Amino acid sequence: MVEQHRFGNVLPHLILWIGILIVAFPVYVAFVGSTHEPTIISNGQMPPWPGAHMIENYYRTIFVGTSGTTREPVGTMLINSFIMAMVIACGKIAISILSAYAIVYFRFPLQMTAFWVIFITLMLPVEVRIYPTYKIAADLNLLDTYAGLTLPLVASATATLLFRQFFMTVPDELVEASRIDGAGPFRFFKDTLLPLSRTNMAALFVILFIYGWNQYLWPLLITTRDEMQTIVIGIKKMIVTADAITEWQLVMATAMLAMLPPVAVVVLMQKLFVRGLVETEK
Amino acid sequence: MKRSVFTHRLLPYALLGPQIAITIIFFYWPAIQAVWQSFLLQDAFGLSTMFVGLENYATLIGQPEYYHTLVNTLIFSALVAIISLSLALLLAVQADKPLRAGGVYRTLLIWPYAVAPAVAGVLWAFMFQPSLGLLARGLREMGIDWNPLLDGNHAMTMVVAAAAWKQISYNFLFFLAGLAAIPRSVLEAAAIDGASPTRRFWTIVFPLLSPTTFFLIVVNIVYAFFDTFGIIDAMTAGGPAKATETLVYKVYFDGRLGGDLGGSAAQSVILMVMVIGLTAIQFRYVERKVTY
Image (tube, rainbow over all chains, first blue to last red; front, side):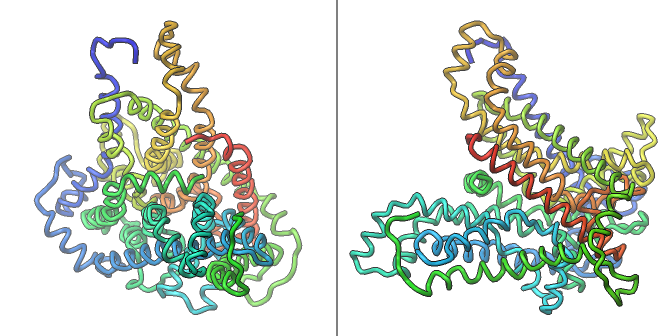
């Protein structure tokens, strides 16, 4: 700021680089682990630099799978994770924007009740109601289905509140103007409100895609068949308690593949990500 | 509320329909069931159930294991919050300085947010794996008999490291936003008065940052309570000898593996009350004061 530092800004740069190294270190180790032979890893001889078996390991991970209990190749798990993340993200955005539209732009009996019914769900995370929710899903025959995997996670108060807040800032003149033009509620929503919400929807999508991709407890309960597994569940099942059998080179390749899509989303859409994160926490 | 609104008899209900339906089926109904089940006792074979009132709660509170898990959860949450908040603050203060290539640092520090808790657990488990992990080997060379499979403290260290690592990026982003909101003029005035950078930090920056810090403490506690399930399940499954079992993990373990649905439901209800409390704090005291 005001002082002239003799060493310029060396110290802040140094601290930041140490921070980056600490943050990146586990991922680097995972990458190194995914490029070596199993024997060198299980002997505890893994060197801190990449080996020569990368292509072979990743090929086996994606198309063949481990030889242990979960024989499903990781390719299938990636597809499941992708479907789950997309359905949760798009589903949440769709149902929340509709309900926020109803709450902000209409007057009807039970309006406040509807708002509170949605708002209170903020206080009921899936972790505190797992077994009863599981039982309902089982009664509805939703075990091992994509609907069961996604539907219970699709309702959320955060997205609705975010859209509600945004709609409140949209000037009233816009409704009046489109009414004079003879537009009904459908036209106004489609031609005015949706285009205005585009940035908000994109920011929310980034956050919700990561949320959906990273789900663990719910998919763990609802999927029993191997071919329905998501990658985040599959990777945990690859670690066998007896160390000798765990094929760490494949586990680490799976870890890299499990991180790639959500991390890419954050890095490539950084602006939208930061916006979405700050907005949803308000 | 809006001045100009549409009047339509059925449309608003149709628009609300999907969300309300899912909310009732998958949120309210299970929550009510959890409360109801917490008053019931099932026999070992699940053949008969009877109403026992508050007995499940009484049994739970009478259990030393429950206190053990509660204390574990508190230690775990406190460590995760302190470590990840202080590292994030240190990094955010550096990144807030006018540096060349400042944006690059942000990109390189925020991505762990996107790593799934279970995957973060697997990464750290690999490094700390007693016989082959890179860090475990280092610790052994330093003369530490590292074995998280047997030693509860070692296991706790491991889960705290993974959980704190994952949360640094989140805290970093919010601290950075908080720091950006502090008016430069105040800092310049203090600098002209001859206050050293350290003094400026503790007397101006840190107090002005306190709403952000407070907000983050609440968020970090919620994170450590609920979102770390994947980390613990992937790394230790609550072991060894329940040394890393948190309250959420115990609900899962007792209900699924232990088959004690009534006790598990009673624990769920207690957790629900805690979430409601934390959310209320977040809204009452944090909402209005935090500036982004």
